[in-house]
Image 1: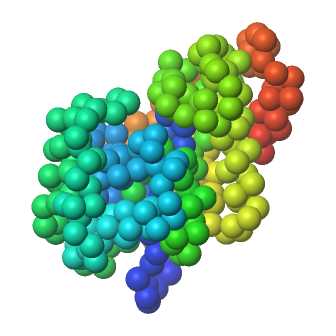
Image 2 (image 1 turned 90 degrees about the horizontal axis):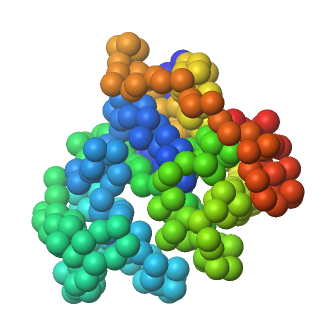
Length: 281
C-alpha cells in the first residue's frame, strides 16, 4: 500500500450501516491502522457518545442550529477540547427518561462520561467513529462537516432482510417507508432499499465522500477490500502489516437468502437489490 506523508490534520470519518451489516469488523480494521474511535465504546466498538447525542427519534426534528451545536460538542469531546457551549445545560433532558433500546440509567452513564473532562484522542491520531445509526443523519453531517468522509457497510440485501436484527427497522422503518409496518420480510427488504437508495443519492451529491464497503467481499478476500477502505480514508497500514487484520474474525458469510425466498416482496425492490448486489456486494 502507498505511504502518504501526513501534513495538515486529516478530517474525521464515520462508519455506519444497517444492524448486522459488519460495521464492527470495519471499525476494527481502521483501529488497527491507528485510528481513534473514542473512549466510551461498547464491545461492538460503537461510539456511545454519538449514540447518546444522535440515536433518538427527536433527532429528525432537530433544527440545523441544534444539530450543529451537538455535533460541535461531539467533535470537541472527541478531540479533547473545551466545548463552546455548556454541555450540562444543553443536554439536561438527554438522560431524563428511557428511549428505544436504552434505559435512563444507561443514558445517564453515557452523559456522565461525556461531561467528564476527556483526554481526547492521542496527539496526531486520526479520529472517527462507528455507530450503525450514523446513516440516519449523515446527509446533515456531510453538510456540517465539509471534510467528513462516510463509510457505509453493506452485505447481501436478501441476507440482511431475513436477519433477526430488526432494531433499525423498528426504530426508523415507519419514517423512511411512510406506512405502518408488520415486520415482514417485505418490510425489511423495503427498508433496506429505501436506505440504500438514499445513500446512493447522497453519494452522487457528495462525490468522493461516501464509500460502500462490502463486508461479504472483505470476509472472502480481505486484502483488496481493505486496500479500498484505506485508500478512501487516506490511511497507512500499521508498520507491522501483520497487525492490519489483528483480532478480526474472518468467517464465511452465511449463505444469503435469494430473491426467490422473499415471498411477497415488491418486484421493484427485488430488482434494485439484485442490481445493487452485483455492483457492491
